[in-house]
Length: 113
Length: 115
Image (cartoon, rainbow over all chains, first blue to last red; front, top):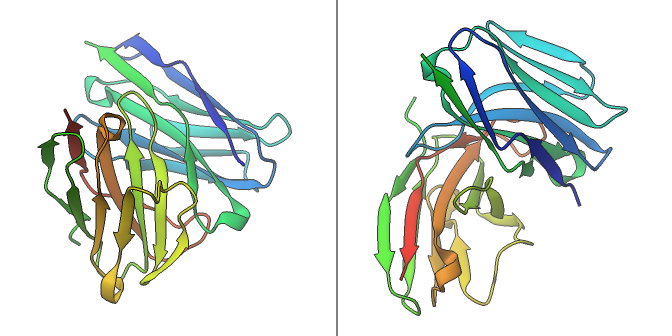
């Protein structure tokens, strides 16, 4: 089955700096890679996703890149703000598993003003 | 639109007791998921429903966990008897359809503490 590894587990940046979170996956059949943001006491919320036929996707300050050959994908947040502080999870969905998501272990991002 | 609703938000029980969680998905969402999130880890899928049928319960500890989705809308997840290692946040999510790329919307979760 699919396995997703996420690094780093914690990340601290200064406001305005960039943050990068990296994930690797094991199953080459996986074809959908969402990123979720989870704030304290809340459920995960989708912030951006990418499909296996696309190498990069951007939405304002957030971008995701996918390298299918190396089986890794990354989240990039530019011009970080204190409200970006949260736990971020990457996930992978196997094509034949009907939407089943395998999550990484999470990255706790702290943006210091 | 209203989000995924879950109740209760918090529950504290002693080991060997039973507990039930309730989830009301977004209206019109055919697929419903229950995840277990242990502190410091990512969510792990326990069971997935398509309408009122189970499509994946491979990770559900069936000797103590059970779930149902009557009428293809609300769902309940039950633990009987609870163990200390069941302490976690139980998240319910729903999506419009069962397919890769169908966005899953999560509820706020139920935090269970087993003492």
